Amino acid sequence: MPRVVAITNQKGGVGKSTTAVNLGACLAQAGITTLVIDLDPQANTTSGLGIQRDRTAGTTYDVLLNGSRVESVIVSTDVPGLQVAPSTIHLAGAEVELAGADASEARLRSAMEGIQHQIVLLDCPPSLGLLTVNALTAATELLIPIQCEYYALEGLGQLMRSIELVRRHLNPGLEIGGVLLTMYDPRTNLSEQVAAEVRGYFGDKVFQTVIPRSVRLAEAPSHGQPITLYDPQSRGAQAYVALAQEVISRGRQPSTSF
Ligand code: ATP
Ligand code: MG
Image (cartoon, rainbow, N blue to C red; front, side, top):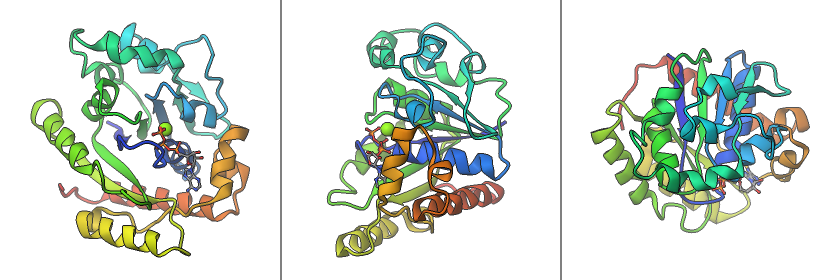
C-alpha cells in the first residue's frame, strides 16, 4: 500500500501545486517511486511537470467520470521515478457531473487500487468540493501548505471541519501528515509572526523545513521543470530536498494522530 498524501488547502495560491511538483521530484530523486495525481482543472501540476494540458489522451477526468483506472492515464516525466496522472480543463465540469452520481466521493480511491508507487501525491484544487473530497477519501495523510501572509489561518477551521467529516463518514484513518510553511520571507516580521502562529496552532505537525519565497520557484513551471532540474543550487531546490527527507522520515515513525 502506498502512502497517499493529499496536498490540500481550499485557499488559493498557497503553494499546493508548487509543492506537488517539487516535492514529487525530490522524492523521486531520493529513490522513492512517486506518482503525482493532478486533481485541479487548472492543471498547474501537469504543465509544471512538462506535460501538455490540452492533450487528448487519458486524464484524471476519465478516472473520475469514465471509470478509467489511474494506472491507465499515467505518463512519465523528465525526472526518473516520477510519474503524473495529468489533469485537463474538462475536470472543471466534473464537480457538477459527479454530484448525485454513485459513490461519487470514493471514485479516486477505487481507481487507485493496484498502484505500485511508494508515494502518491494528490494536488487538490482550491475548494472543498467533490474533487477535494475524493482526494481526502483516497488519502492516508494530508499535507497542508500555509502561505506566510496575512489571513494565513483564515479558512483553516473550515478545512478542519471537512477533514473531520471525511474521517467520520468516509476515511477514518485520515491523518494530518504535516503542515508546510510556504513563501517564507525572512526579511519581513509578518512571515515570522505567521510562522509562530501556525506553530502555535499545529505544534510539531509543522515541518521544520520552511519553503522560502523564491523567484526561481515561480519561474520553473513556465519551463515545465521542477526546481531541481531548473536550478538545483537554488534555495528553493534545497528546501524541497530537505522537505522530501522530512516526509520520508515521518513515514517511518509510528503515526500519531492530530
Ligand atoms: P491554486 O489554489 O490556484 O491551485 P496553489 O495553492 O497550487 O494555487 P501555486 O500554484 O503552487 O499555489 O502557487 C501560487 C503562485 O505562487 C504561483 O505563481 C507559484 O509559481 C508561486 N509560488 C509558489 N510557491 C512559491 C515560492 N516559494 N516562492 C515564490 N513563488 C511561489
Ligand atoms: Mg494549484
